[in-house]
Amino acid sequence: MFEYQAPEDLLKDRIILVTGAGAGIGRVAAKTFAAHGATVILLGRTLEKLEQVYDEIEAAGHPQPALVPLNLESAQEHDFIELTNTLEQEFGRIDGILHNAGLLGVRTHIQTYDPVIWQQVMQVNLNAPFMLTQILMPLLERSENASIVFTSSSVGRKGRAYWGAYGVSKFATEGLMQTLADEVENISNIRANCINPGATRTQMRSSAYPAENPASVTAPEDIMPLYLYLMGRDSLEVNGQSLDAQ
Ligand code: NDP
Image (cartoon, rainbow, N blue to C red):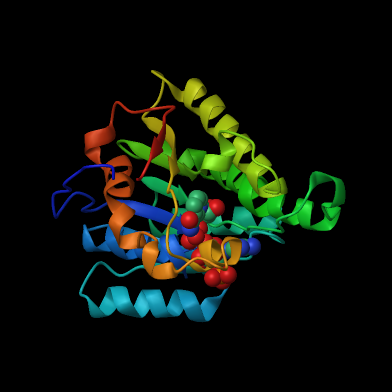
């Protein structure tokens, strides 16, 4: 497990956007960031799930979050522009993005992979993070130090049979992160890195490994040290890295 002890106020006054914040790792990351003082912007496709996370953060007495219901599969340029305008008016800047929303797609041979599902997975896992990052760059540039965290996977570092579009999208995510990190190195206050969560107990993990006993898999709460580290001031010098949460 990545070892890091986050100070309680690590993310005080920071404004952090989390995609896929309604379930799984994103839900726990949003709540963890809020518990460390951040104002979190909860982006996801299912409003009820986002509202539940919102209520939990409020009930815990953490900074009031913001809600952004948005389906990253169908979102168009105008949706991203609208989001940016709203965030600019509301906050004036952004200090972090956790690109966490992800689609597994299907587990099958490349030879038989449904091209429609291929496009969907690429849209959510790769194209949306690209578009979101691009359009939010001006708001990130207004931060004293901004952190962009992409979510990778072990199948995004070494190709593995039947992981199809998912694995390929994660390879591309690593490439996007490296390209961006090289562009911002030394000339900006922005850093970009990847997290590989490792096997984590979520709906996606159960879908990929239906025969596995969920109790044997690490809980999302246990992988939070790396998420906190990359969002906070202790990682200021870290750029262009792909780190393992476990
Ligand atoms: P889950 O499937 O549990 O959660 C994924 C989240 O993404 C959900 O909140 C989901 O929303 C959201 N999402 C999916 N599609 C869209 C969309 N079109 N628009 C907006 N939001 C969307 O996955 P995990 O928590 O397990 O995964 C989080 C990240 O970690 C992913 O990028 C995944 O690839 C990566 N990862 C996970 C591992 C694991 O073992 N769990 C291992 C390696 C990487 P909704 O709930 O409404 O469907």
